Image (tube, rainbow, N blue to C red; front, side, top):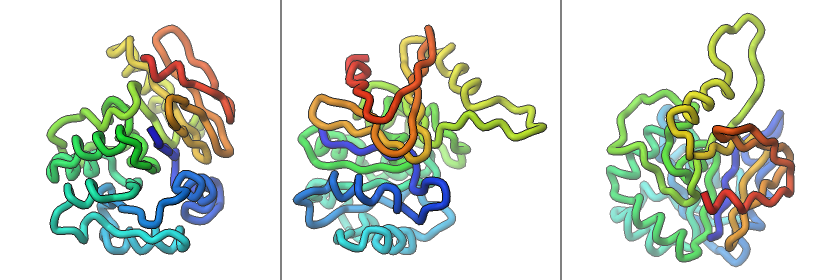
Amino acid sequence: MNILMLSSSQYLDTGYLTHAQSMIEEHLTSVDELLFIPYAGVTVSWDDYLTKVQQALPDISIKGIHDFNDPIGAVRQAQAVAVGGGNTFNLLHTLYQNKLIEVIRERVSCGMPYIGWSAGSNICGNSIRTTNDMPIIQPESFDALQLVPFQLNPHYSDYQPPGHNGETRAERLAEFITLNPTMPVVGIREGAALKYEGEKLTLIGEAGGLILTQSDTKNIEIGQDISHLLMA
């Protein structure tokens, strides 16, 4: 496996993918061309989304999957794939619509580098049932790429706005765990990423994360090896 799961496209007041640029370039060593999947974009055109990513990563040649007549063939021939953020439901719906779930899973399982941020990371998990997004469209299934055997929650935050009486992120994830007691959830804070290389899973970047299970919640520090989750 060679997977980079970024929590977010931005961190604090940095520019688009600025905090992630070195992680992405290191992840794409020896890759000349990247195939970008913009399907999570809803209020931005896929052409504009592609341009934005290309401007953020000027040293990498990037092509959009939407420019290919045969998206399955594009994935099969890709050196590496990147999947951007946006709405997770629309992303997964379009992946199913274009019959790309199995081919992406197959290529990544054979070692093709994969990069995701936000929604693009969320779909690496068992399902998208711990996304933060509104279900604006109904995918064929909530089952995701299942590249890792647990749930993901990018953009994880403990912040509770003053006067806000809705559930916290931790409370919402606790609801999931109550109904799915054997499925761990990994919350990735903005600025952090999960790197799955070979058989090793590590938290990298500039912020931490946490693992939520039925029994407890454990913080994850930068550089921490959490490969035991791959046995979940």
